Image 1 (cartoon, rainbow, N blue to C red):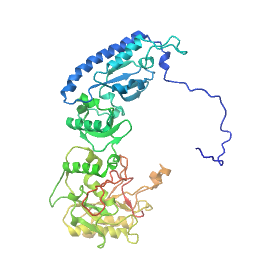
Image 2 (image 1 turned 90 degrees about the vertical axis):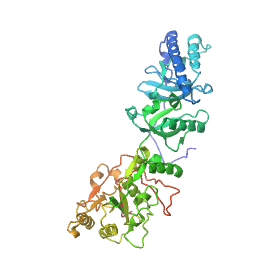
Image 3 (image 1 turned 120 degrees about the vertical axis):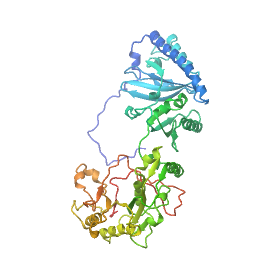
Image 4 (image 1 turned 60 degrees about the horizontal axis):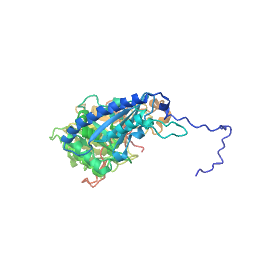
Length: 508
C-alpha cells in the first residue's frame, strides 16, 4: 500500500487526457499481403530439406554412444521489420524447446531444439496453415488461415550452427577454431535439472573441456563455465544439442569469489597441480613490507619459509591478522590470480617470498616515524640472509598527498636505502612502493580529482619504483579462503584485483 506523503505537493505538473489504448506491434504482419499457398509451400520445402538433414545426422548421434538429446536445432528467422511469434515455437509436451531469441537490427531469430522424430509437428502446423481456416468470428467473419500468427512471421527455417547458440556480442566470439576461452554455458532443464547438468558435465569432459566447479540455478536455466575452443564445441552435435545459449565468460574475479570454500579448494588444488616451484639457495626473493603474511595458505606454503617471516617488533606475531599482506604476497607470487586459475597451462614459479610485518592494521604506529620503521623493516631480512638477491615491495603510504612531490623524511629514507648511501652504494636496493589510494569521494570531483589527488608519501621517492596500477578487471574485496588450511591463523589468498591503487593507508 502506498503511504501518504502530505508534505510533498506537486501542483501544476499534470493534466487530464482521455485514455488511449497503446498500439500493438505484434500483429503488423497481418497487414502484409501474403500469398498463403506460396508462402506455405516455401516453408514446407525448407522443412522437407531439414528432415533429410535430421536423418543424416542421426547416424552420427547414435555412433557417439550417448542416448540423450537426439534431435536437431533449427533457427527460425523473421522477415525484416516483423516480430517473430517465437512463443508459439515451443511445444512442451513434444519436448520442443525454445532455446534463445536474438533481435538483430530489424530481424528476429529464434533457436529451437526439436527432439528426434518431432519435426513433423512443424510440418503439420504448416500444412494446416495452407489448407485450413479458423472458425468465423466477429473480427474475421470468413475465418483466417490456421496458425497465421506464427507462420506469417517466419521467413526462413534452417539448421542452427554454433552461431545460433551465441547470444553475446559477436566481437566476443573467438576468431580462431583453436583459441581456448572460458565459455558461459546456459543449459536447459530438460525435465530434471540435476540429471541434465551431470550428463552435460560428463559429455564436456569426454570431449576435453575443463568444467569449472559451481553452477548458477535460475528457474529455466542452469549456468556453468567451461574452458575449451570453438573447434571442440563444433565436433559434437550432441554437445551442441545440450546447450541453450553460449556466451563468453566475464573475466573478473567475482566468479572465484562467489564459489563455496569446497569449490575454491578444488580450484586451488588444480592450480597447484599445474604449478612447479623452483628450488635452490640462489633464487631471488620478493620481500613484502606490510601487515605480515600467513604462510599456511596452500598457494603460499611452498614459497616462504617460517624463518623468512619477520616483524619490526620482537613481541609481534609475524602472521597476518589483517589480510592485506597475505593478499600482496599472493599477487607477488602469481600475479593476477584470475589468469592463473582460468588457464590450463603449466605455471613455473622461479622466485620466493619474504615478509616483514611493518604494521598490524591501518592506523598502526601513529606515534612512530615511518621512515625509521621502514629502515628497520629492510634490515630484518638482510640480517637473516645478507647475500640473498631480493626486491622490496611496500604498499604502505600516508593517507594524504600534501607533499605534492616534495621530498619528505620518509621518502628520503627510502631514497637512501635504494641508493645505499650508508654503504657507499655498494649494495643498492630495488624498492617498489605504492602510489597511494584515491579518496573514496574523489569521483565527485572527477576529472579534477585526477590532478588534485597526487602521489602519497613516500611514493615521491626518486630512487624507488612507484607503482599506481589501474586494474582492467572489476575490483573485488572478497577474500578467497580455504576452509581446511593447516594454519592456525586466518588465511586469505590474493584479492584478485586490487582496489584503486593497491595500497594500505596509515590513517585507516
